[in-house]
Image (cartoon, rainbow, N blue to C red; front, side):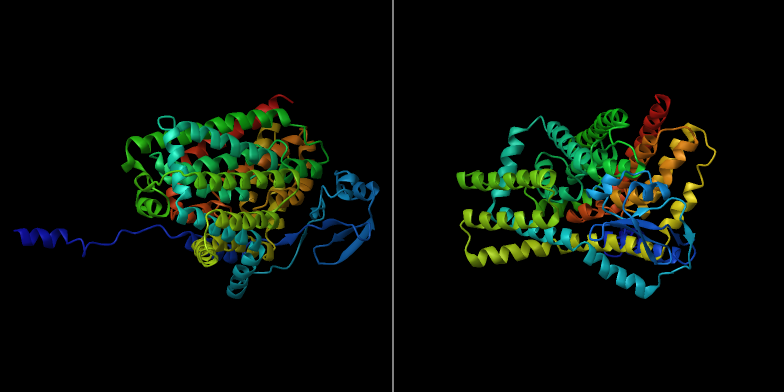
Length: 513
């Protein structure tokens, strides 16, 4: 009888292996293939693009056929092209990317992307993201010093003891701070360095790594979605629409406060559930890897004076980074240089030998190879879509959807249009300069001020930013070996809330005009 039961039930070795959701790389490869196939069927076309040429003090206009003509860089030329942006914004570099010329769209011959194009897109995607990839490698090397020495574990253990019983405060503080960074200067890719700091704090406190990821990532997303003075979205989009970026400020600051509160409550709710019952964690299968990679309370060493000095230096590195980005216009080149110098100083403070410093740095950088390559693979999808000439055609088609609509329907439809465009054009500034000159004048036809289009643009692209695999989310998930489907299971209820939230605030903006 026992034999029969074993035959019926099957031994563990003979049981079917549980199917797992594809890895981040496979998800992106699938999307890349779908995007390439789509270029064979989707309409193709292009708008003329205007760019200020500082060396000649002329406007260069590139037509869809690739020909270039020049016009005098004056307000008359802009008026003639129906571009509402002020001349000074081009001359002082505020508008530094090619801007779409309204009414210039032309259908052009398709450029379908095949197998070779996809392979080259993968290579070019890595080239395009080499700045962030190098930053990730250097960060990995620095973190290896902290982990190897035990300084990181000691610091996180001390912090967890201080916040014991009040861990929810961590969620509130981190989400608010990152949200402020997002709304002021578009803090997004810069947060890559923060996950390795934040995740161990939450793991030691009894949460799962998803809580740490959410506190940072949702804060960044809601901040950029409700941008107030962000030069890479609000300011550049308002400039392209020919309006002051402070127009619509009131509704956006209100949305920022409400949206941040929603995200905080959502993360706290999930975190409390996991602390009470760890079996309910959505990423339970990743627990062993996370515990091994990060620290556990049983292994926490004493927080010595040397460790305090090293951790203080580590913290000051982030302070300098934020100051450099906000005040000095730094980007990944400067940030990478900062972390490289900081890593060398850290190795010296930890009294590591030259050989130890080199070996540990290379080992830590090696651990980040997968994370860095994810950035390039994600970018390759945009490369295929750009080379396939479908982005402008999609924009032209969607601009026709809102003709003749009521003001409320117009605002809501514009929001959903930007959700779609946010997937195909995963750059806030790039999407702004391409689409706003075409979309903003449509508001005039329905009797709405153009700031409504700016708000819809930010809300739409921001909503897509929470889940788009071509953004930063898969890079973050790769750090802790969490599959994309687990994150989607976590985030989708919040997505429904955010869609309703965005529509409500857009309707409020229309009603109060």
